[in-house]
Amino acid sequence: MNFNAPVVTMLYAALCGVLLIVLALNIVRLRRGHRISLGMGEGSALEQPVRVHGNFTEYTPTFLILLLLAELGGAVFWFLHLLGAAFVAGRLLHAYGLSTARATSFGRFYGSVTSWTSILVLSGYLLVRSFG
Image (tube, rainbow, N blue to C red; front, side):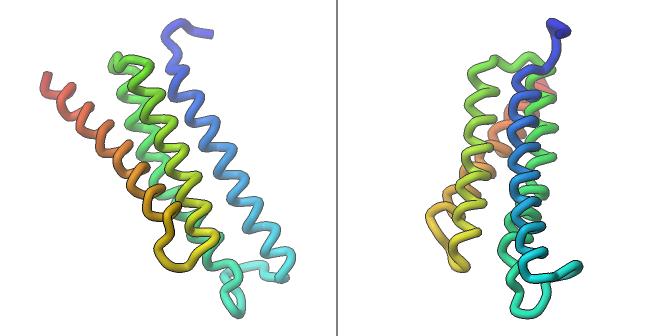
Protein backbone atom coordinates (compact mmCIF):
# COMPACT_ATOMS: atom_id res chain seq x y z
CA MET A 1 0.00 0.00 0.00
CA ASN A 2 1.15 3.51 -0.79
CA PHE A 3 2.68 5.12 2.32
CA ASN A 4 0.57 8.25 1.78
CA ALA A 5 -2.70 6.37 1.28
CA PRO A 6 -5.56 7.88 3.32
CA VAL A 7 -5.92 4.79 5.50
CA VAL A 8 -8.16 6.41 8.12
CA THR A 9 -10.67 7.55 5.51
CA MET A 10 -10.44 4.13 3.87
CA LEU A 11 -11.45 2.49 7.16
CA TYR A 12 -14.49 4.71 7.79
CA ALA A 13 -15.54 4.66 4.13
CA ALA A 14 -15.49 0.85 4.28
CA LEU A 15 -17.53 0.80 7.51
CA CYS A 16 -20.02 3.25 6.02
CA GLY A 17 -20.20 1.16 2.84
CA VAL A 18 -21.08 -1.95 4.84
CA LEU A 19 -23.70 -0.06 6.86
CA LEU A 20 -25.22 1.35 3.66
CA ILE A 21 -25.67 -2.17 2.27
CA VAL A 22 -27.11 -3.48 5.55
CA LEU A 23 -29.70 -0.68 5.49
CA ALA A 24 -30.46 -1.37 1.81
CA LEU A 25 -30.87 -5.10 2.44
CA ASN A 26 -33.42 -4.31 5.14
CA ILE A 27 -35.48 -2.42 2.55
CA VAL A 28 -35.16 -5.28 0.06
CA ARG A 29 -36.28 -7.76 2.72
CA LEU A 30 -39.34 -5.66 3.52
CA ARG A 31 -40.15 -5.07 -0.15
CA ARG A 32 -40.09 -8.81 -0.79
CA GLY A 33 -42.10 -9.58 2.34
CA HIS A 34 -44.79 -7.01 1.51
CA ARG A 35 -44.57 -7.59 -2.25
CA ILE A 36 -43.83 -3.94 -2.99
CA SER A 37 -41.65 -3.49 -6.05
CA LEU A 38 -41.69 0.31 -6.22
CA GLY A 39 -42.64 3.12 -3.88
CA MET A 40 -43.82 2.75 -0.31
CA GLY A 41 -46.93 0.64 -0.83
CA GLU A 42 -50.16 0.72 1.13
CA GLY A 43 -49.78 1.35 4.84
CA SER A 44 -46.24 2.69 4.33
CA ALA A 45 -44.43 -0.33 5.82
CA LEU A 46 -41.33 0.97 4.07
CA GLU A 47 -41.48 4.60 5.20
CA GLN A 48 -39.16 4.30 8.20
CA PRO A 49 -36.54 2.00 6.64
CA VAL A 50 -36.44 4.11 3.48
CA ARG A 51 -35.89 7.25 5.58
CA VAL A 52 -33.18 5.52 7.64
CA HIS A 53 -31.37 4.60 4.43
CA GLY A 54 -32.01 8.01 2.86
CA ASN A 55 -30.81 9.89 5.91
CA PHE A 56 -27.62 7.86 5.93
CA THR A 57 -26.99 8.62 2.27
CA GLU A 58 -27.64 12.33 2.79
CA TYR A 59 -24.89 12.85 5.39
CA THR A 60 -22.27 10.18 4.74
CA PRO A 61 -20.75 11.43 1.46
CA THR A 62 -20.16 14.91 2.87
CA PHE A 63 -18.59 13.50 6.00
CA LEU A 64 -16.27 11.21 4.04
CA ILE A 65 -15.17 14.02 1.73
CA LEU A 66 -14.38 16.22 4.73
CA LEU A 67 -12.53 13.38 6.45
CA LEU A 68 -10.49 12.68 3.33
CA LEU A 69 -9.56 16.33 2.91
CA ALA A 70 -8.53 16.58 6.56
CA GLU A 71 -6.44 13.42 6.27
CA LEU A 72 -4.77 14.53 3.04
CA GLY A 73 -4.19 17.91 4.68
CA GLY A 74 -2.17 16.31 7.47
CA ALA A 75 -4.63 16.04 10.37
CA VAL A 76 -3.38 13.77 13.14
CA PHE A 77 -4.67 10.20 13.23
CA TRP A 78 -6.29 10.39 16.68
CA PHE A 79 -8.37 13.40 15.53
CA LEU A 80 -9.47 11.63 12.37
CA HIS A 81 -10.28 8.40 14.22
CA LEU A 82 -12.18 10.27 16.91
CA LEU A 83 -14.40 11.96 14.34
CA GLY A 84 -14.69 8.85 12.17
CA ALA A 85 -15.73 6.68 15.09
CA ALA A 86 -18.12 9.36 16.35
CA PHE A 87 -19.76 9.70 12.94
CA VAL A 88 -20.22 5.94 12.48
CA ALA A 89 -21.54 5.59 16.05
CA GLY A 90 -23.88 8.52 15.43
CA ARG A 91 -25.21 6.99 12.23
CA LEU A 92 -25.74 3.65 13.98
CA LEU A 93 -27.55 5.36 16.86
CA HIS A 94 -29.68 7.36 14.44
CA ALA A 95 -30.53 4.31 12.33
CA TYR A 96 -31.56 2.36 15.42
CA GLY A 97 -33.53 5.26 16.88
CA LEU A 98 -35.37 6.07 13.66
CA SER A 99 -36.05 2.38 12.98
CA THR A 100 -37.63 1.76 16.37
CA ALA A 101 -39.59 4.96 17.04
CA ARG A 102 -41.65 7.33 14.96
CA ALA A 103 -41.18 10.20 17.41
CA THR A 104 -37.97 11.65 18.76
CA SER A 105 -35.92 9.01 20.54
CA PHE A 106 -32.58 8.85 22.32
CA GLY A 107 -30.90 7.19 19.34
CA ARG A 108 -32.41 9.49 16.77
CA PHE A 109 -31.60 12.68 18.69
CA TYR A 110 -28.09 11.83 19.89
CA GLY A 111 -27.25 10.07 16.64
CA SER A 112 -28.06 13.25 14.73
CA VAL A 113 -26.19 15.47 17.18
CA THR A 114 -23.11 13.23 17.06
CA SER A 115 -23.13 13.05 13.26
CA TRP A 116 -23.68 16.78 12.83
CA THR A 117 -20.99 17.58 15.39
CA SER A 118 -18.50 15.41 13.51
CA ILE A 119 -19.30 17.23 10.26
CA LEU A 120 -19.13 20.66 11.92
CA VAL A 121 -15.81 19.96 13.65
CA LEU A 122 -14.25 18.75 10.41
CA SER A 123 -15.70 21.73 8.53
CA GLY A 124 -14.27 24.12 11.13
CA TYR A 125 -10.90 22.40 11.02
CA LEU A 126 -10.77 22.67 7.23
CA LEU A 127 -11.86 26.31 7.27
CA VAL A 128 -9.09 27.20 9.70
CA ARG A 129 -6.56 25.20 7.67
CA SER A 130 -7.67 26.85 4.42
CA PHE A 131 -6.85 30.30 5.82
CA GLY A 132 -3.68 29.17 7.59
